[in-house]
Length: 83
Image 1 (spheres, one colour):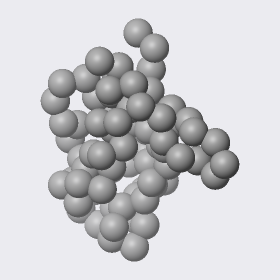
Image 2: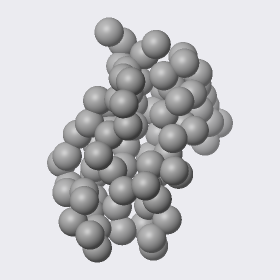
Image 3: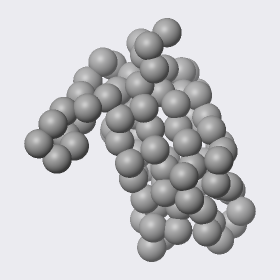
Image 4: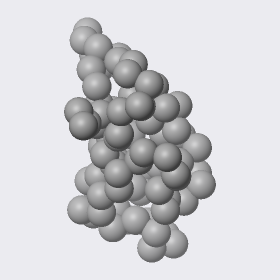
C-alpha cells in the first residue's frame, strides 16, 4: 500500500492537537489527530493508500485538501507518496 503524507496547513485548533506545519506519515496506524478530523479525512486517506484517485475540480488527483468539521479551524493537505 502507498503511504500518505498529511500536513497541517492552518490551525486554530481549540484543543491544541494540531499546529500549522505538523506532518504525519500514514502507513499502518492512525496519526495523532483529533477523532473528528480523522473521521472526515479517513475515506480519502484510505482511497489514496489503496492507489485510488480523488476528484479535484475536473481532474482526478492523488491528493486532497480538507478542513475540520469544527468550523474549519484546522486545514489539512494529504498526498500519496511513491515509496
